[in-house]
Each structure stands twice: as C-alpha cells, then as structure tokens.
Length: 314
Image (cartoon, rainbow, N blue to C red; front, side, top):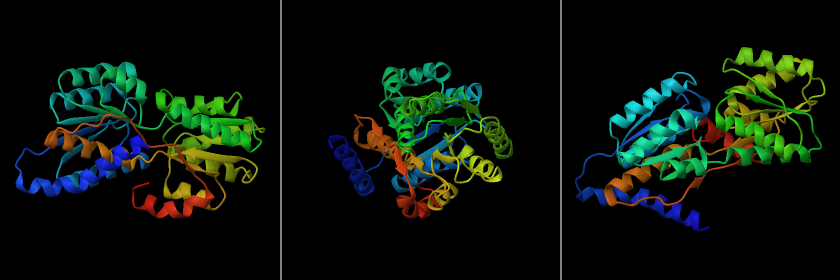
C-alpha cells in the first residue's frame, strides 16, 4: 500500500505540475527511450502511446528509438548515441545484460538518470545504478501461468518464444515450466506470422499429446490460434499468451483462448516521462520500483478491456 500511495502522489503531481509551471521558466525536459521493440509492434506501440500522451500532457520532448529487428549490436549503437546526446532522462529495456549493461552503467556515471522498463528486472537495475525498474517479474509471471494451467489438470505443454535469447522472454518460458511442474519444450518462433504458424503446426503434428500452447507475446498468439484451428484441434488444445491486443481479447471473449497476461505497458511509457520532468523541475526523484504486472485477463474481464486495447492503452 505504501508503494501505491507514493505513485498516486506522483500521479497527482502530473496534474498540478503544468499549473505550477505557468509562472516559472526553465528549459524543456528531454527524455529518450531506447528499447529493443519497434514502435509498430503491438506491445511496444502501447509503450510509445503512453510516452506520447505523457509528453503532450507535461510539455516534454520525448523520443522513442529502437532497432529495426531484435538486434543487440544495433541497439548498442542507438543507446550509445542516445547517451552522447545527454538527455535529461534515459529509459531503456535490457534484454541482454552483457550487451547493454556497460552502456547503462556509463550513462549513470555520466550523470544521466536511468529508468529500466520491461526487460532487465529489479536486481539488474539496482546493480547498474538505475533509479528503478518498471515492469513485471517475467519469471514470476511465467510461474503464475504454469500454475493456472496445472489447475486445469493439464501437464503437456509447449512454450512458443519468438525471440529466443531475449532474457525476459526466456524467463517467461522458464517460469512457466516451473509453475507447471513439468518439462516444457521451447519452440523457437519467428516474427513472420506465416512461418510462425507453420512451426507451431509442425510441432503439434509431431507432438499429438500437447494439451496447452503458451505464447510469450502477441507475435505468437494469432499464429497459434490459426494453427490449432486449421488442424481441427480447437477445443482440444487450450492456449494462453503474454500481452494483449484486440484480437487476443476477442479470442478470450469467444472462449478460444484462456487468458492474456497484461503487463500494463502503457504505464512504462507514461510514468518515466512524468518522473523525469518532475526531477528536472522540482528535484523530485522516484525511490521505489513500479511493478506493472502480471494481470490475467480472462473471459470475465476481456469485454471491459477490449475497447481500451483498440485505443492503444492496454
């Protein structure tokens, strides 16, 4: 409850800060996001939406930068350039500590405040000197998913990972297996939906005892549903996914998917912009991590969330 009160006070400050600014003069706050996810991606578009909304509300200059694909050398170059530009605040995802950790440390040592979002976790964020981590424990979210599947009386599952090597997505699969209490093969997927569907269909054909398909993001959810449907296995094989989208929520409402796991990533875009602006204006600094998930959106909740997903905030 203490953490919730702190962030409620911060949210209140969002409302009053522009009014206080009316009689005060200062340079515009500049915040740079460097993530491994493209703004066109269903998940990351929500993060960018949150960033854009906060920037408009607070009068902040916010920039969103990402490599064209999941490419750590390319992300290193983008992050290095962002640090060199000396923003007032840096927001970064860390799917690969070895590739990105030293750069984040250098940013902190140069006096740039850093907030880590989505990938990296609390422990790594503290180690690198970041102000806080905003997101969910991906391993714990995976455990919770595995426990839910186990409660259904199922034990034969597969975890479809479209970015093997992304530590956060790997942790989702690892946690899922531990929560289920069974060995769970990881199917290496791809971003292309047609090829992804083919890989899932091939796995199901070779493993007819599969009872549940977990996808670690929306990139795998639609192909999984299509593969199951085309194989005539709808209703026989259950599925669930990390992340939300209008199509995922529609599948949940229709009973084709058990649930979607909501990381509330709009907050990952919105809150850091507000935090860095308040730091520059009033020397107010956040002092605690901000857990945004996991939240399981099932059939009972999907109807109330789908319109928000269409608006790009869920």
